[in-house]
Amino acid sequence: MIVGVIPARYAATRLPGKPLIDLCGQTMIERVWRGAHACSALDRVIIATDDERIMREAERIGAEAMMTDPDLPSGTDRCYAVVRMLESAPDIVINIQGDEPLLQPQVLSDLAAVLQSGSADVATPVSRIDTSADLIDPNTVKVAVSPAMRAVYFSRSPIPHVRGASVDQWLERATFWKHIGIYAYRASALERHVMLAPTEIERLESLEQLRLLSDGARFDCVETTARFISVDAPQDADAVRRYLERG
Image (cartoon, rainbow, N blue to C red; front, side, top):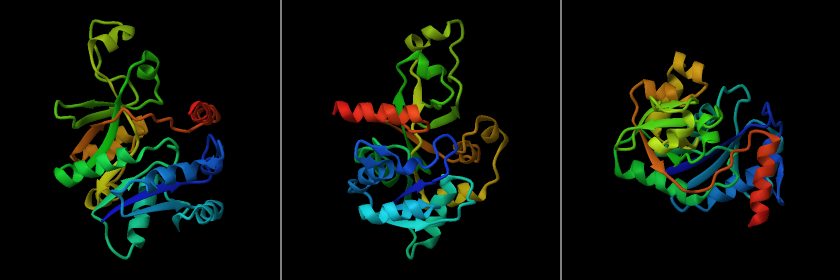
């Protein structure tokens, strides 16, 4: 069984209540849920929340939702809490970020297929970076990959470093990858993640995926050309609205 879990926390620091903001006639959580629900590879899609207002919105749109402890430290922990409440253990759990309103179902299908056909612990999407602004933006997470597209390291800094060239020349010299924060876990890898203690590099980078990577887990990166606009602040929501209005 493959289960998609959408962590949706109400009290976001930079944009409180963001799962319920309006994006051209639909709330953000509705847009994320509809994108996931349209994926035929998923047997269930569950919204994992900590707030009754989001539970009511899930009921309004016909989505399955579960209440989780508001004190859980991350969306990954919220996913694991949902898994522990299920009557049957899933084989694969996809952590679908609740702030990705442009989610395309094919991305989820591609991640699930990687785990079904290979031996990775985690599959996660990446896209090519094509602007210097994204390359140097610490909010754009970068990933260095092996020739087989396995993650070597995730960072908020531009990686790899291109020695002997100015940063504005780097895109001409190498391929850089943007990490998109959606994760397809084998159920055992998800449990392993939440049982591990945070690492120093995870705290320094503020990137929780480094915890499992540092423990030797295999992350397979899956290239996508799908458009993503993560909503972390009001200006991101405005960018999504402009994109939707353009059709």
